[in-house]
Length: 600
Image 1 (cartoon, helix red, strand yellow):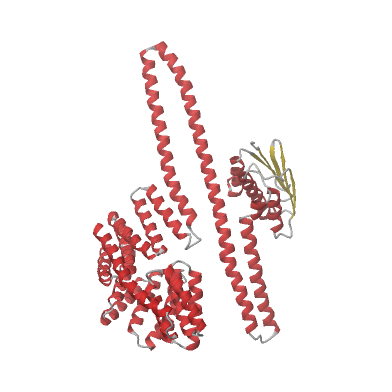
Image 2 (cartoon, one colour):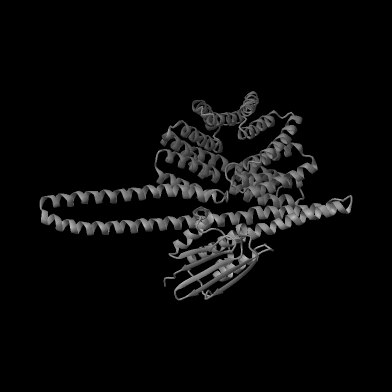
């Protein structure tokens, strides 16, 4: 491990010394008053130098090169620079920025028919779609790049596409086709003497072996790839190989080697400023720690992974972190309870022994012991109740966080995509010539439907994460929620009193969700035409009623109270130390009465 770490340091030092002289010479060409061709060629060479070594520098130098190319109206160079910016953005996890630059580059190169420069951009775009698991589009772009490379008789390009597109079939679980493509790519690379491409084929083949649990074959291929990459001093590829070896060793059950390889990969990824690789490594380290039963370390690794993935994805984080955290805290609580129970048993034996020695003293001690035990049991029950409250609070907070995350995803993800779709349709409408008014009206209906969908997404996101509750009182938030309901058959009346001042945020959030749940139950199940909501604050607390004129239900039917809706209402009110009653019968509507005390 120590030797390998020294090698990594030496590798980066050698790359820095060698690369710095190249960088300095290129920058001297750019900064001096040379011809435009010299300057733009030096700029493109500089971007290639930093391409897989420093993504931030690639973006910074790319912006400078764009200004130079645009100033000289050089569209082809603009396209090449945008490709470099797209690749750097891809590795930094900014997939939307990467896609924008790739598409702009393709538009330029297709227009001027620069096929040799166009094929690599198709490949980069395919990798982006592969990353986001849009496999059909990924394969379409790989096929476009492959067709150009075959037309140009470019064996290196054909080899690259075979290797890259094999991953698509790997994701589709067509391992035979994946291995076939990786092997074909490796043969072409070997014939051309391209050892780096050989190493990528070996890594991809090893990846399939890991999926098939053929860990010995996977390790053999990865070590061969590592040897090639160390000879080439390709720090980016070496970091990937260490990560793949860590995954293989984890699957094999050799956890010490897995930790060693993954740690080495993280050292290099940190130098390279490659957050996605670091995130994947921490995820694998977390899995290793879980298998070893070290939930605390697993949680720590997962927190590091989540901190990195915040800048990459807005999805999946909350539930997995809560799961690890819950496992760790549950183990801790169980140990504490076990220790308390063991202590009580020991005290029981002590008191019984003393009682057996002296009867009178034993009676006195027994009396004291009974009181002591009652006190301990009371304390234990209080502690259990406290832990249950903490657990309920954690679940509710996790639920609110999940609602907020989903609301943001709807608003910033789906909402933005729908808005983009509307814009594209509107732009397309101005370009297309309709054969008749019926087609035009149909097209306009489509745009109208998309617009309505955008509004619906925004409404749902606002209901899930009520901004009004952050900005104003509980009463205002409830009115805003009711105003957003799109239910023409249900008339809702809201009355509030004494709620002008802000309440504790937990109380406001819980009561808002209870009202929301009651309204949703009325809409879904009651078949009501009117709904009256009353919420009054006085010196005793907050009292509320939610009454509808719907079909009602049998309150003696226990199965009704086993459902998620009514159980959620009861659990939330009990969390606030309040009470809730349901008054209903088939055919005469439903009244939900609640009271929550306020502690000053």
